[in-house]
Every structure is written in structure tokens, then in C-alpha cells.
Length: 453
Image (cartoon, rainbow, N blue to C red):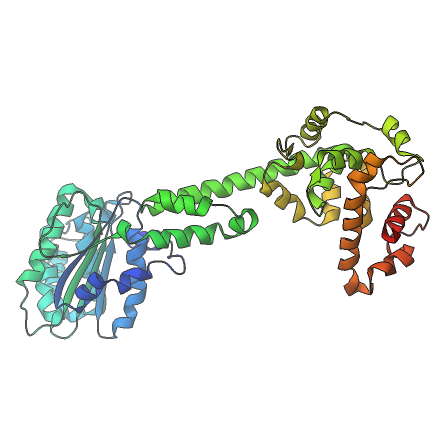
């Protein structure tokens, strides 16, 4: 009968604490006889809230007696009926205050001797168990205060829920107001079937739990939010309207979709050819967004280029002089992961999550993602830099598109190496092996000439 309590997940850190600070809760907890109704929409977190309160109750004092029951509408017969409630409460009383139920013990012994085995020859009846429980209270309250918590009253059926709520209220009113310790009852229930109870303390969960939902969503989507700067957590919180279960469902959908998106991106990159991977590397690792013209030349020139002029490269490579053709090529080679902006003609990924997925991987892992054997080599920083042969026939359009970018990237990389024994930018210029083990490489000649300009 206690399985339902264990099925409820503990509250996320930083949530549910508002109830213990709530003025209505304090007023109820300070009363001698009090009935607290925690009401809320389905899925608003009432059960988690009550579980959290129970976890904090040991702090109220060693002498206090705490009884609880969690109804479970999809559970066994005893988990969803008042009979199960009173059997559980009497069992808890017998375990903690065995002397409080002499009549129950005597009845049990007498029936076992005259009728036979309980459960086979005879059954307990709801009304008699309820009477035993109510008759035990004066004796219990002589020495110990009592707290009773009942969760999901609505899950025992409409008629039973209404009757139990009225019985709880009547029980508190019948007990003497003096000479006994405090007795407080707290139950959670939806707004229906109990529509109104006169002179009881009430807390409406969906009016108080917005910050809890926000904390929960931010916690579950914390890594997602850091990577994407997304407004999704705020959107989920706003649209939950107090329903925790809906927020949980949406968080799961977001995480599932992100996992699927990452899988699809990984699969697309893994099946890309050399040109596609080259395009992805340029877009991802550029120190600033590249224009269509810059990317056009970057895609044209190869590492260790055998050609002596840009015109030769242009004739030998897949050169797209038209911007529309270049836009189509970007979309085709990137498998739809990149686009060209219509206003600024800048090449970028279609979403920040694409760049985050790629950029968070070590660079050599990105190379291995491509199945082409020719690309499975150790990547070096200068491999990302376009290698352009500096000859007299170098066109002005090439230099205007690439030189400033290469210059910026080269010094960006040089600055990052200062912690590795490189003292200044000119160390790299004067020490070719810092950049490439082949001092006569095209990359070295280009960068050295740019650095000295």
C-alpha cells in the first residue's frame, strides 16, 4: 500500500520550499485543530509537494506522530479505496503506539479464534476500521500531537472523496479543544469533486508554483540553454500555466528532439565528401563569418596547391562566379546545414546548435566524421587557413576576399600559442617550423608575406 510514495520522484532542488513558508501553511501548522486542503489542477505537482513536506516533517519534534497515505487511482484495490486508507492508518498507529488500539486487538483475536484466518474466513469492514481509528485518537492525543497527510483524495472516487473530506472536518470538530495535543490534517485533491469546504485552510498550487516550474525546467535544460541561448525554458514555463506534468512532458520532448537532431547532424557529416567537409570546417572555424566571395575563394584553393596562379586554380577547380550558384552549392554541400543570408551575403549555419555540435568536438574527431580516407589525417591549425600561391598574377579580387581574413586568422592563432613558448607574432614569421615543417610551403609563403606587409 505504500508503493505510491516511493513512485513519486523527489522534488528538484530549490522547489516546493515555498509551501513551508506560505502564510496559510504556517497558520494551519500553528492551529490546535486544523484542516488544510492543498488543491490544484491535475499534474500541478501536488503529490511531489506533499512528499517534500513529509520529508521535512521530522524536524518538528521527536514526540510528534506522523501518519500518511497516498491514494493511487491506477493501483490495487487497497491503494485506491477508503478501506485501504484506514487499514494503513491503523497499521501505522499499531506500529508506533501499540497501546492505543486495545479494542482493535481484542476484536482481531476473537475473530481469529471463532471465525478463522483473516482474509480467508473473514474481512475487515470499512466502517468498523474507521470507528477504531477515530476512537483511538483521544488516547493518542493525550501524550502526542498528531499530523495526518493524505494525498490524491480525488483518486478514491468522487463519492468517497467528498465523504472523506467531510469526515475529516467533522472529526476535528468533535474532538475536545482542551486537554489534548494538537491534531492537524492535510490532504491534496483536485478542484473536483470537492467544490467547497467551509472553514478550512486552502492553498491553490498553480497560483504558487510558477517559480518551481521555472527552476525545474532550467535545471533539466541547463546544458541545452547554455549551448543554444534558447528561450525555450521560458516559453515552457509560461505556457505550463501551473501544470508541472505538462512542463515535464515538454522538457522530455525538447531533449528527445535535441538528441535526434544531433544524431542527424552527425550522420550527415559522416556521409559528407571532401568538399562538403571542407565547407563545414570553413564555416565553423572561421574567426568571423565569411562572405560568399571569401568562401568562394576558400573553397577553390587546396592545401599544397600545385598551381602557380589563381587563374590556374580557377580553371581547375569548381569555381562559381555567380552568387546564386554559390548559394545553391553551399546548400548542396552542407546538406542543408548552412545558408547564405539574403541581406548581408554572409555564409552561416542554419542554427547555432549545428555549430555548437561541431565546434564542441576536437578538430581531429570532425575529420574522422568524414568517411573519406584522404581526410583522415592529423589536422593542424594552418590547414584551416586558405593556401594561396603568391605570384604576380594574383588577382585583386582574390586578395580583397582572402588576405585580410588570413591575416586575422594567422595572428589569432599566433596569439593563442604564446603560452607554448611563442613570444610574439614575429616569432612565427621568423621561425617557419612553428607553422609548418616545410618552410617553402605555399601557406608559409603567403602568411610570411602578409605578416611583413
